[in-house]
Amino acid sequence: MGRLDGKVVLITGAAHGMGESHARRFAAEGARVVLGDVDQEAGGALARSLGEVALFARHDVAQERDWDGVVAAARERFGRIDALINNAAIFHARALEEESLEAFERILRVNVIGTWWGIRKLVAPMREIGGGSIVNISSIAGTRGIPQLSSYGTSKWAVRGLTKIAAAELGPFGIRVDSIHPGSIDETGMHRTPSDPAERARLVEPVPLRRSGRREEVSELAVFLASDASSYISGSEHVIDGGRTVW
Image (tube, rainbow, N blue to C red; front, top):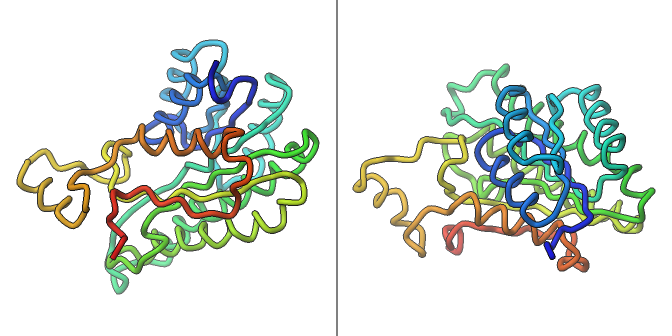
């Protein structure tokens, strides 16, 4: 018996990195998974590797019509949507003075508006079945002021706040909304993982556990929040950073 047997989970940004890890972990826990991504080749290949429990749909989270399409495809194939993992995001680091309006707006459209569309479009389908779980992937950059991350950090602070507002509004419908705040996680596609041992040691020195996190560890937390085991948890921030932000 899997922790997600009988549940249908929509995962955005599912073709690579952390999204791919979520897709594999959720399927292993018994969920039927709907995989959204702009990379049709990689997303389609992942869905085929997972078999009949998976459906891929080309999905740009910043576009309302794509949300309508992926939600309709999920309901047509599987009949319902029990959980949404708002995982899709883009990242870059740049000094505030050197940032462009175009780049700033692009990050906000994907990371914030994409998350907002997901929540908005899943309210009705989840309300119909008596509730559900929405998990928004934020970052520790949404809990601290980190230099060079004016655009990305702003977007993740917004996701943090949006999560709490949505939890307050949607709780009466049985819809839980939580945020996950990863620290440094290997192989997410967000940043380069150093190959040099000395450089890796320098980067993890501020982390009390003295290592980077693994994608699978974030996926385990997402599984818990999407499962019935977290049925009385909503509006919470779940930091997974090896203790990096304890001080």
